[in-house]
Length: 320
Image 1: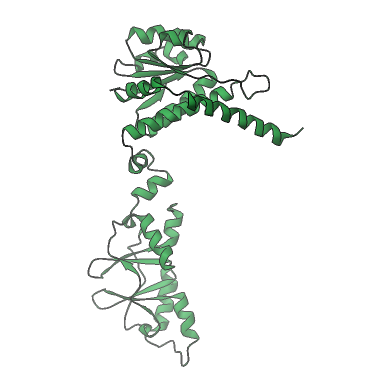
Image 2 (image 1 turned 30 degrees about the vertical axis):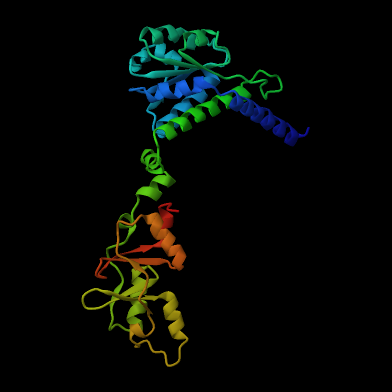
């Protein structure tokens, strides 16, 4: 059996369903977007079985992209959760056949509250279609299932139509990257947009040496500081230079080397630093990568040492 061919045929059938649906998008879709935009409450998504699973994902997508939304299971609605629906809400009900028994049971109660109802179904003359104020048709030529029975193409199309609604609403609301991150503060994007240098930089027990220190002092400071680098400052804690492991190794190779050499003789002068602890950590990472360094020193605007940001701290926090 050629599974590769079967997989390709499955994807092609579902892709064709999406392409045909894209051709048939009409003014009803515009009205559905406008109805949701005008909603002063929440968009409540409901459905049973596979449609319910798709609906739960759609509700999550809406909620994370600026449209307050939650999923309501029809059975739970019949046993008290109808109270979660208010007259300010809009209901998006999903049933490919339009005749799901559990869903059909709650439709009269939804309309009794005069709540706007958007139906997603293949048959606008079905029970769901008749109760709906607007019907977004979900119609596929065939399911990808070889028996043409298991919801495959139809669920893919339903999910895609939900995504299309969400994208339209995002554009209508001028939903920005920063808005998305606000709903995902623990995700990679949230970290990228909200974590600042001040949140990650080390400020205590910094390996700082006076400019009069020796190479021997630097080696001890580097070892104790566990940063691979010692910071060199003057009497007023102004940053003057850095002494790294690499600087020490290069010093060892120089003629007339002595552990009593002044640290400034072999240090990296005028090292890279920033004077803005409010800088986004992701921007600091860009700077670190551009300059091919591992340690970024943070100072105030008069070059007084405030802290250090190591590339390992950025990696550990998932900043990219």
